[in-house]
Image (cartoon, rainbow, N blue to C red; front, side, top):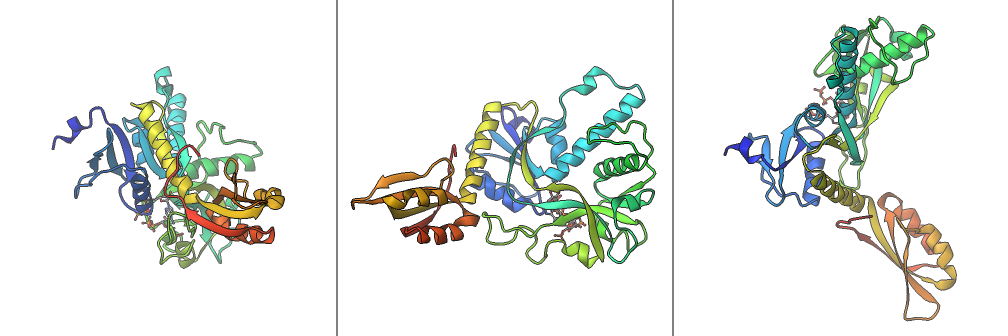
Length: 350
Ligand SMILES: Nc1ncnc2c1ncn2[C@@H]1O[C@H](COP(=O)(O)OP(=O)(O)OP(=O)(O)O)[C@@H](O)[C@H]1O
Ligand SMILES: O=P(O)(O)OC[C@H]1O[C@H](OP(=O)(O)OP(=O)(O)O)[C@H](O)[C@@H]1O
């Protein structure tokens, strides 16, 4: 199949090709009725029922393809987008310093976040040997730092160094021409081993959070791993957080088909909402209705209908799945009966 030509007229949608984010991303696509068949060893799949082509890419590369190329939509980690944007800032700073800058360099680059997808939560943290001497990020100024997130780590330590010199900076401050005293060492994997192997005094690396998303009955991270398991196993401890992250839906600043981007975003938002909420239905004496609807105010408002029994009403309201147990307890206390909890398969516009 001549894939490149078959992409004409299709919205390009980047999906993580493997790793922790893949399965949850595929679940979202299924919930949004994006039908495709991924051929073995092929990283492009044509969607059967919409003018879309899925492109399977490393999560770390998706911000580049969406922010700098022709890809319109993408699912990746917020940390990856932040690292990409920090890299764009570093290039822009270097160009301005060497007078290579020109107005065309300032074309809209990077990507816009559409939605937090509610899975893949973790933290990018500064980690040091648990029994070592370092207690704060400032203790590591001038030392060796191993990381896969070189741009975020460089900006973080530039801010620490400037603050130590009494220069107050904010996240948008320019570090133009600043030569870091701290040595940032780029590592592509197994970053947690860097301290033990004498390569680094500290690292900047991800620490998983063992979260149970409504989408899954299994933990989001590797079920055999606790949150921070890698860090603990490597004898490290986290001392500061650089970025808190989760999976996000991003879009190009100039998408080829904005209407289709909005449609896909609405469908994915519907799937996420349906997974986050349940529908709670119950009967309650009209005299208790005010107290009951304070417990179940709904996402917009509860639906109240009269029962074929004087003095009683039926209420239906969306309740966050993670709150439903105490909500049912409280409804019982105010005299609600026949309390039902229904899963929501999908939703739109809520
Ligand atoms: N515990 C975690 N460790 C690393 N990344 C995580 C974790 N939990 C969620 N993520 C998200 O997954 C992204 C990494 O996905 P990616 O596919 O690049 O690597 P991976 O999931 O670690 O798989 P692999 O390293 O085997 O390729 C991170 O940028 C982050 O947004
Ligand atoms: O807190 P945890 O859930 O234990 O996960 C965190 C670890 O996972 C990632 O590495 P990964 O396992 O992807 O292997 P890598 O070092 O080759 O990237 C990340 O770089 C951390 O080292």
